[in-house]
Length: 228
Image (tube, rainbow, N blue to C red; front, side, top):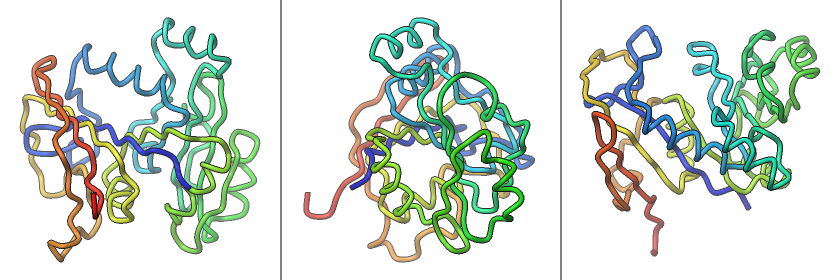
Protein backbone atom coordinates (compact mmCIF):
# COMPACT_ATOMS: atom_id res chain seq x y z
CA UNK A 1 0.00 0.00 0.00
CA UNK A 2 1.11 3.57 -0.68
CA UNK A 3 -0.35 7.09 -0.56
CA UNK A 4 -2.22 8.70 -3.43
CA UNK A 5 0.46 10.77 -5.19
CA UNK A 6 -0.44 14.15 -6.66
CA UNK A 7 2.36 15.85 -8.60
CA UNK A 8 1.90 19.61 -8.98
CA UNK A 9 4.23 21.75 -11.07
CA UNK A 10 4.44 25.14 -12.75
CA UNK A 11 6.47 25.27 -15.93
CA UNK A 12 7.16 27.60 -18.82
CA UNK A 13 5.57 27.16 -22.24
CA UNK A 14 8.69 25.22 -23.27
CA UNK A 15 8.49 22.88 -20.28
CA UNK A 16 11.15 24.37 -17.98
CA UNK A 17 10.76 24.49 -14.20
CA UNK A 18 13.49 27.12 -13.77
CA UNK A 19 16.59 28.50 -15.51
CA UNK A 20 19.70 26.50 -16.39
CA UNK A 21 21.24 27.91 -13.18
CA UNK A 22 18.21 26.48 -11.31
CA UNK A 23 17.25 29.99 -10.30
CA UNK A 24 13.66 30.16 -9.12
CA UNK A 25 11.31 31.89 -11.59
CA UNK A 26 7.83 33.24 -10.92
CA UNK A 27 5.85 31.33 -13.52
CA UNK A 28 2.27 31.56 -12.22
CA UNK A 29 0.27 34.20 -10.36
CA UNK A 30 -1.93 34.72 -7.33
CA UNK A 31 -4.77 32.44 -8.44
CA UNK A 32 -2.43 29.53 -8.94
CA UNK A 33 -0.61 30.26 -5.67
CA UNK A 34 -3.94 30.02 -3.85
CA UNK A 35 -4.81 26.78 -5.63
CA UNK A 36 -1.46 25.23 -4.69
CA UNK A 37 -1.83 26.37 -1.08
CA UNK A 38 -5.17 24.60 -0.85
CA UNK A 39 -3.77 21.35 -2.28
CA UNK A 40 -1.00 21.54 0.29
CA UNK A 41 -3.45 22.21 3.11
CA UNK A 42 -5.59 19.26 2.10
CA UNK A 43 -2.67 16.82 1.82
CA UNK A 44 -1.23 14.66 4.57
CA UNK A 45 2.31 15.36 3.36
CA UNK A 46 4.24 17.37 0.77
CA UNK A 47 7.50 16.14 -0.77
CA UNK A 48 10.41 17.68 -2.65
CA UNK A 49 13.85 16.52 -3.72
CA UNK A 50 17.12 17.78 -2.30
CA UNK A 51 17.80 19.79 -5.46
CA UNK A 52 14.73 21.92 -4.79
CA UNK A 53 15.81 22.48 -1.19
CA UNK A 54 19.31 23.55 -2.22
CA UNK A 55 18.10 25.81 -5.06
CA UNK A 56 14.98 27.41 -3.55
CA UNK A 57 15.09 26.81 0.22
CA UNK A 58 11.29 26.34 0.44
CA UNK A 59 9.45 26.13 3.75
CA UNK A 60 6.51 24.15 2.24
CA UNK A 61 4.19 25.70 4.83
CA UNK A 62 0.52 26.50 4.33
CA UNK A 63 0.33 30.24 3.77
CA UNK A 64 -3.38 31.07 4.13
CA UNK A 65 -4.53 31.68 7.74
CA UNK A 66 -7.97 30.37 6.76
CA UNK A 67 -6.51 27.10 5.50
CA UNK A 68 -4.36 26.80 8.62
CA UNK A 69 -7.53 27.26 10.68
CA UNK A 70 -9.26 24.52 8.68
CA UNK A 71 -6.41 22.13 9.42
CA UNK A 72 -6.56 22.96 13.12
CA UNK A 73 -10.32 22.39 13.12
CA UNK A 74 -9.70 18.91 11.69
CA UNK A 75 -7.29 18.22 14.54
CA UNK A 76 -4.25 18.35 12.26
CA UNK A 77 -0.96 20.20 12.53
CA UNK A 78 -0.80 23.61 10.87
CA UNK A 79 1.24 22.14 8.05
CA UNK A 80 1.36 18.75 6.33
CA UNK A 81 4.31 16.48 7.01
CA UNK A 82 7.21 17.92 4.99
CA UNK A 83 9.46 15.38 3.30
CA UNK A 84 12.81 15.75 1.55
CA UNK A 85 14.15 12.96 -0.63
CA UNK A 86 17.86 13.37 0.05
CA UNK A 87 19.96 10.28 -0.65
CA UNK A 88 23.18 11.74 0.81
CA UNK A 89 21.62 13.71 3.69
CA UNK A 90 22.76 17.03 2.21
CA UNK A 91 19.88 19.10 3.61
CA UNK A 92 21.45 22.17 5.26
CA UNK A 93 20.80 22.40 8.99
CA UNK A 94 19.55 25.98 8.59
CA UNK A 95 17.06 25.13 5.80
CA UNK A 96 13.67 26.81 6.04
CA UNK A 97 11.94 23.44 5.78
CA UNK A 98 13.52 22.41 9.11
CA UNK A 99 12.69 25.58 11.03
CA UNK A 100 9.69 27.46 9.61
CA UNK A 101 6.21 26.49 10.73
CA UNK A 102 4.90 23.79 13.02
CA UNK A 103 4.59 20.17 12.03
CA UNK A 104 6.59 17.03 11.39
CA UNK A 105 9.49 16.71 8.97
CA UNK A 106 11.01 13.63 7.33
CA UNK A 107 14.36 13.31 5.58
CA UNK A 108 14.60 10.19 3.41
CA UNK A 109 18.17 9.13 2.69
CA UNK A 110 20.14 6.04 1.68
CA UNK A 111 22.82 3.92 3.28
CA UNK A 112 25.38 6.07 1.44
CA UNK A 113 24.51 9.07 3.61
CA UNK A 114 27.19 10.19 6.04
CA UNK A 115 26.35 9.13 9.60
CA UNK A 116 27.40 12.49 11.01
CA UNK A 117 25.03 14.29 8.65
CA UNK A 118 22.18 12.02 9.67
CA UNK A 119 22.91 12.66 13.33
CA UNK A 120 22.99 16.42 12.70
CA UNK A 121 19.58 16.33 10.99
CA UNK A 122 17.91 14.04 13.54
CA UNK A 123 17.00 16.79 16.06
CA UNK A 124 14.97 18.55 13.37
CA UNK A 125 13.43 15.70 11.39
CA UNK A 126 12.73 11.99 11.40
CA UNK A 127 15.42 10.43 9.22
CA UNK A 128 14.36 7.35 7.26
CA UNK A 129 17.05 5.25 5.60
CA UNK A 130 15.43 3.78 2.49
CA UNK A 131 17.72 2.21 -0.12
CA UNK A 132 21.37 1.34 -0.54
CA UNK A 133 22.80 4.07 -2.81
CA UNK A 134 19.68 6.06 -3.67
CA UNK A 135 16.32 6.42 -1.94
CA UNK A 136 14.09 3.47 -2.87
CA UNK A 137 10.94 5.39 -3.74
CA UNK A 138 8.46 2.47 -3.74
CA UNK A 139 9.76 1.36 -0.35
CA UNK A 140 9.66 4.92 0.96
CA UNK A 141 6.04 5.40 -0.08
CA UNK A 142 5.09 2.13 1.59
CA UNK A 143 6.78 3.35 4.75
CA UNK A 144 4.92 6.67 4.56
CA UNK A 145 1.64 4.78 4.27
CA UNK A 146 2.53 2.83 7.41
CA UNK A 147 3.05 6.19 9.12
CA UNK A 148 -0.51 7.23 8.28
CA UNK A 149 0.12 9.32 5.16
CA UNK A 150 -2.65 8.72 2.64
CA UNK A 151 -2.36 11.75 0.34
CA UNK A 152 1.04 12.98 -0.83
CA UNK A 153 1.63 16.18 -2.79
CA UNK A 154 4.93 16.33 -4.71
CA UNK A 155 6.31 19.67 -5.91
CA UNK A 156 9.56 18.68 -7.61
CA UNK A 157 12.12 18.82 -8.86
CA UNK A 158 12.63 17.08 -12.16
CA UNK A 159 14.86 14.28 -10.90
CA UNK A 160 12.46 13.23 -8.14
CA UNK A 161 9.48 13.49 -10.49
CA UNK A 162 11.22 11.31 -13.07
CA UNK A 163 11.89 8.70 -10.40
CA UNK A 164 8.24 8.64 -9.36
CA UNK A 165 6.96 8.39 -12.95
CA UNK A 166 9.52 5.70 -13.79
CA UNK A 167 8.39 3.63 -10.81
CA UNK A 168 4.70 4.06 -11.66
CA UNK A 169 3.99 5.89 -8.42
CA UNK A 170 2.10 8.95 -9.71
CA UNK A 171 -1.70 9.07 -9.72
CA UNK A 172 -2.49 12.68 -10.65
CA UNK A 173 -0.60 15.50 -12.36
CA UNK A 174 -1.61 19.14 -12.29
CA UNK A 175 0.53 21.36 -14.45
CA UNK A 176 0.33 25.13 -14.70
CA UNK A 177 1.86 26.32 -17.98
CA UNK A 178 3.02 29.93 -17.88
CA UNK A 179 3.29 32.51 -20.64
CA UNK A 180 7.06 32.50 -21.10
CA UNK A 181 9.88 30.64 -22.79
CA UNK A 182 12.95 30.00 -20.62
CA UNK A 183 15.03 27.76 -22.87
CA UNK A 184 18.27 25.93 -22.14
CA UNK A 185 19.15 22.30 -22.68
CA UNK A 186 20.37 22.15 -19.06
CA UNK A 187 17.33 23.83 -17.55
CA UNK A 188 15.30 21.38 -15.42
CA UNK A 189 12.09 19.96 -16.88
CA UNK A 190 9.08 18.25 -15.39
CA UNK A 191 10.76 14.84 -15.62
CA UNK A 192 14.54 14.73 -15.93
CA UNK A 193 16.72 11.64 -15.45
CA UNK A 194 17.58 9.30 -18.32
CA UNK A 195 14.03 9.14 -19.68
CA UNK A 196 12.15 6.20 -21.16
CA UNK A 197 13.52 4.49 -24.27
CA UNK A 198 10.74 2.09 -25.18
CA UNK A 199 7.46 3.75 -26.08
CA UNK A 200 5.63 0.93 -24.34
CA UNK A 201 7.07 2.20 -21.05
CA UNK A 202 5.84 5.78 -21.43
CA UNK A 203 3.59 7.08 -18.65
CA UNK A 204 0.21 7.64 -20.30
CA UNK A 205 -2.15 10.36 -19.08
CA UNK A 206 -5.87 11.03 -19.42
CA UNK A 207 -6.86 14.68 -19.59
CA UNK A 208 -9.21 15.33 -16.69
CA UNK A 209 -9.66 19.09 -17.06
CA UNK A 210 -8.22 22.40 -18.18
CA UNK A 211 -8.71 25.96 -17.02
CA UNK A 212 -7.40 29.36 -18.02
CA UNK A 213 -5.70 30.84 -14.95
CA UNK A 214 -3.66 34.01 -14.39
CA UNK A 215 -1.71 34.45 -17.66
CA UNK A 216 -1.49 30.75 -18.49
CA UNK A 217 -3.41 27.51 -18.41
CA UNK A 218 -3.85 24.78 -15.82
CA UNK A 219 -3.99 21.18 -17.05
CA UNK A 220 -5.17 18.31 -14.87
CA UNK A 221 -4.22 14.78 -15.85
CA UNK A 222 -4.88 11.38 -14.30
CA UNK A 223 -2.36 8.60 -14.85
CA UNK A 224 -3.69 5.72 -16.91
CA UNK A 225 -3.28 2.26 -15.41
CA UNK A 226 -2.72 -0.87 -17.45
CA UNK A 227 -5.95 -2.78 -17.84
CA UNK A 228 -8.14 0.21 -16.86
